[in-house]
Length: 239
Image (tube, rainbow, N blue to C red; front, side, top):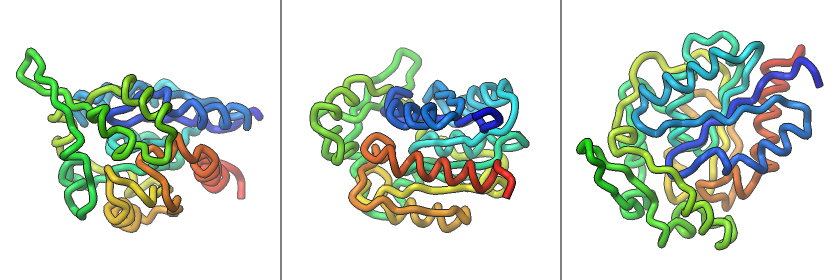
């Protein structure tokens, strides 16, 4: 279908773009151009600049999708880009200026992320953080098969401690761009109460996926694609 917006998918921490394979396959089959953005996971402002550069290279309307920490990245990267017609958050951080992922994850009880992290000190004094493979399945991907969860734990990309602790700066795009929020109802990384708080604050059209883990886009690709396509239909097609 010509004229469809480009769907840009931005992964979060402890993941890479391969997690979007099932979602991307469905979107492509439905006729959408799809781009999976490489999120550097080095620092919020740094990462947002990289995603912004990619967005600036795309002609025509964009629906921008972010998972987890990727939500914080898209909230900054989309600011000022008139081509971005909708933001879709998947079990994601939706920060206000001055808030970090770390602060938001601690806002309500229920996150296992603190006890799940495995630090790797870097030569520059920074630290890379991984989800310990021993707890990746129960804490990060409980509704994904054990076999799949093992593979995702092996291929995860770390985020720096600085990235997760860095506050959002500048205007956040969700104030001016229509946004949609898929809440994972059994999330043990970002508590559902935190996700609901952020979705309500941003005025998002919200769907709760009961029983879904933090990897809701992997375990429930159908629900994920349905919300993305709702955003497309409501924000980019003539009503």
